[in-house]
Length: 215
Image 1 (cartoon, rainbow, N blue to C red):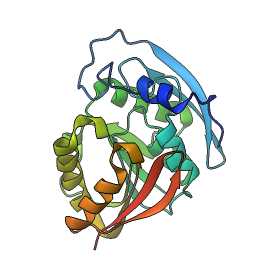
Image 2 (image 1 turned 180 degrees about the vertical axis):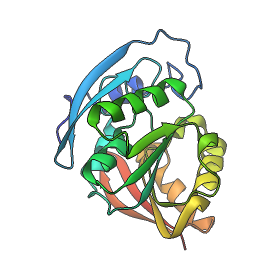
Image 3 (image 1 turned 90 degrees about the vertical axis):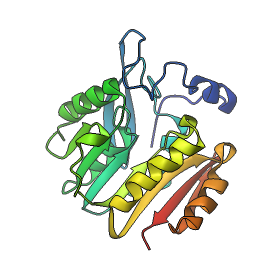
């Protein structure tokens, strides 16, 4: 997978601080768009990001590690949890023609950009982004994929995961990526303690790729 030139890790972490409130429903910074291209699983994705949305103008390091260290999933119903402008869910939709992908986010700009990107990539019939409360209550997912919003705080993150993990179908799994310095190992232990067995699929560039199974 190719992406924009990487910055030193400390500079990248500083850039990804929530200065623009990307986890807010309606960021108050001017909405300017920024286009970039990346390659995932053999497909070139031209994506539009924007101010007030996570990882403006580039594929963030964590998501890049997640996609580089995994293979495209099989067909099924997928959730891109905290989708932002849609990089993970759109990569799945592009690589898996029979997939059905829902991206959820609280950021209205992110939702708009994700749906615009789906249209531009020709996968609007496969991918849709929406607010969490717009997902039908009975809808189950074969897999959840996520670069979870760690910086919302431990309590909020735990609530988020315990809200969506029960939406996995029997035998389903969540694939996520978390920085080691942001508590990946403690999160792995906590998930196991909550009854969600979690193993490490890969470790690269200071990030853990985790697989959480529905028991």
